[in-house]
Structures are given as C-alpha cells and as structure tokens.
Length: 68
Image 1 (tube, rainbow, N blue to C red):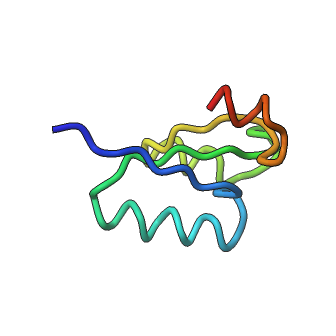
Image 2 (tube, rainbow, N blue to C red; image 1 turned 30 degrees about the vertical axis):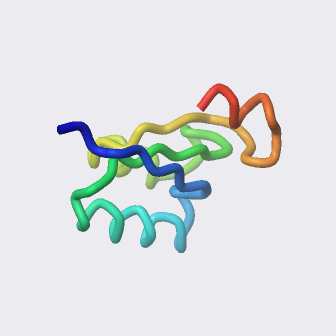
Image 3 (tube, helix red, strand yellow; image 1 turned 30 degrees about the horizontal axis):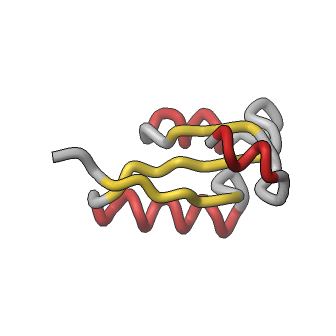
C-alpha cells in the first residue's frame, strides 16, 4: 500500500525540519517539500537521505505549487 503524500513547506529550516522528522517517525506519509534553494541549506542533503521529495520554489507562487 502506497503512503499518502504530505506537503511541508520550509522543511530545510529549523522548525520545518523538526516537523518533517516527526511526520517521518509516524511512517504514514511520503513527505514532499518545497524549499527556496536546495544548494543553500545543509539540511537539504539530510532530507534527501530521509527520502523526502524536494522541490525548489516559493510556496506563495501558484506556478511553483502547481509543479509540486
């Protein structure tokens, strides 16, 4: 059975990464995140290792959200 998707914005930040870790511990969802830039955050590599699907963009831009 496939896990449901959950979108978390700002997952590379302090609070967002804590939220991602909590959600991943539940083992109920596949986490998708939209972040400003993959290369600017050390958390980006850690998130990828945890199988978080990262998309670069801005959460307030309709076209960025639609691509996610």
